[in-house]
Image (cartoon, rainbow, N blue to C red; front, side):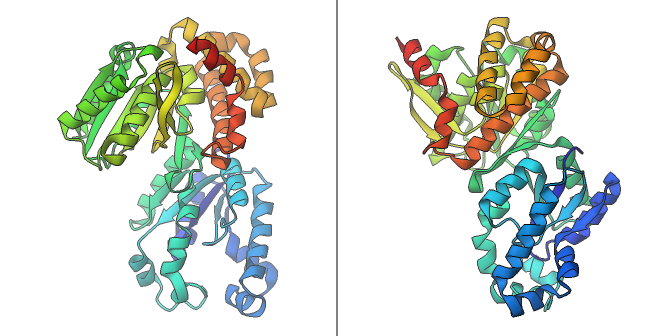
Length: 417
């Protein structure tokens, strides 16, 4: 565990119960944010609410959380139900810690502590608050079912904390991006766990190299499964390419609870994501990028599209995946030309938001060119962090996200002609 863990979620969901168990198993301290506020104020939360109002309590809560976020020491911190209401504070928390939301239905929460006088907002307007905070709780590295035993919940929390994914905060469509070695099969199986059917979209270059173990794992998990293999190359990123995916979805009877899995480079993720956004007015999809360019750019951010004539990406949609797994082991099979070309995107990302990445590119050039897995994990993760930070603040490219187009505007025009 390299970063602090923040346990969020609604009142009575079990943060103060699960948190100590996770901390004990990880061998790190446990911090209860609400308990710290009560101790410092010398009053209960209800007394603070009644005497000073909710605004005063939120200010105390915000100050204490800011102080905790300034300390990078690994530990488990249980948050109050409203600790992350302020979005900029929430984004800072997502960047400096692993944030996991514990979830349970309101009926379960009511049954756990009827008439609890320590939580002044629960009995008054719990249902309303849950609805109002839906986006707050969705913007997390993971959401964990807290209706199970403490041990089971702790297992899932520890798994996410150990993986240390990057969060793309996109409201109710938020998701995690995992970056590691040899994770493609496991993450693909996890991403498709609750789907009624899976359509794997790949291309003629990638499918022979990487599809078999993924298809085998999904078949072993009992999924209704179909695959479609597209022609490779930007010239095939067309409506006709999307139509091949739609046809496969139709033939297998993919319904709204089914999912698409994009296994390939940027062209595959663009086509699969666009097809997912339009099939039955939108089905879920997940990404397994197989090229360096796809890992550091196309697979993150939810831009999906096909070309139309000479207009690149003219027909498309913002349609976020449910998850992305960047398995750098897949980069060992990428042709050298594409791999080296993608390093320009890495340099661009460093210029936009991570000067330390420029230093890494200079000092570890040989390891990068040799495709050293540990080095690639760091390079790809740094790029994903930069892009996720921008997308989280401007998902629909109203302003800030345009900075990610550095070089693209001219480059795309040049390619088109």
